[in-house]
Length: 277
Image (tube, rainbow, N blue to C red; front, side):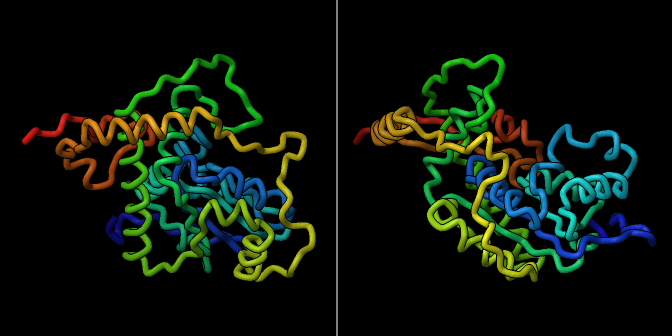
């Protein structure tokens, strides 16, 4: 993105009092973290507002309308703004000429990842087949997921690419994010939120650590299926080996939509028998 292509905030733009962005990947525990943040009542209303299909009319009207609509939606009354981004959402903003720090002075970056990357890929594979992404909301039509080593491998590679995307973005932008592991968030949510409150300049609160939407409590979605698929995947890996076919230039450049990455149109990993001898 060249300086000439950037879209600057309009003269009458009024940024939030405090802002943060959760930079993450699918199945990282970001839904759980964002529910905790929304439940605090004064830490913004983070969600995937810049995702595909969100605020399409405002997006077509231009960057100012698009960013303005999201900022208005994702603020709490005290002026704190929060939003969640996957790499394709961030790329969509860049394509539109939007640099969030230009619109959100003092923006705090929260980098959320999951230590168990293979477990994340297996969860990703199950969710893409069932369309069951959160524990409290079920799709109208659910189909039984089928084990697919190639799909798990493909999504594992997506997650590695996306984590690299965020690392590269932080390095090139001079950003030092607040780094969080999902496992740490799940173990000590109050400590995590207290740290973020301090970074945002908010006073301590005894109310933090409770998920929002309490009538729809979040539950761990991992079942014995996840463990069985892990064992089977590792057995396939030991038997057949694993390699990635050459990546198109488009994938190496980090371009593409969320659908491209999930559907595997940018890169095709495969299991191949090891050579004997």
